[in-house]
Length: 120
Ligand SMILES: [Zn+2]
Image (cartoon, rainbow, N blue to C red):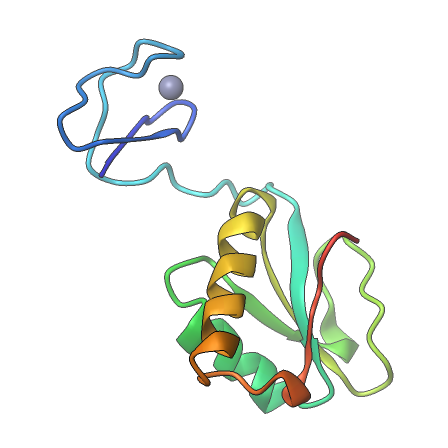
């Protein structure tokens, strides 16, 4: 996979320049800006479960598990008391959903353990 350093678009390995901005493509994805808003993709009553989702299932994304008491991203999370939320940069939300559904389908994640946050 090749990546545009300016807009972050993904291209096939044989591509050389970005069709949108004309930049020379690189091998690494565009780094996520620290300012990029984080969105919740998963929530659980069990912080350890949220932690596992962030580090095991969403490890390729910049996922962060945040306990209810320390939420530091701008999206209001609607967990119950004592819950935990897994958030990813907004641009990775679609990919995160896909990974979570794959994990549920192949049994790596028990849907009883928490809720996938969709369309909020
Ligand atoms: Zn581009």
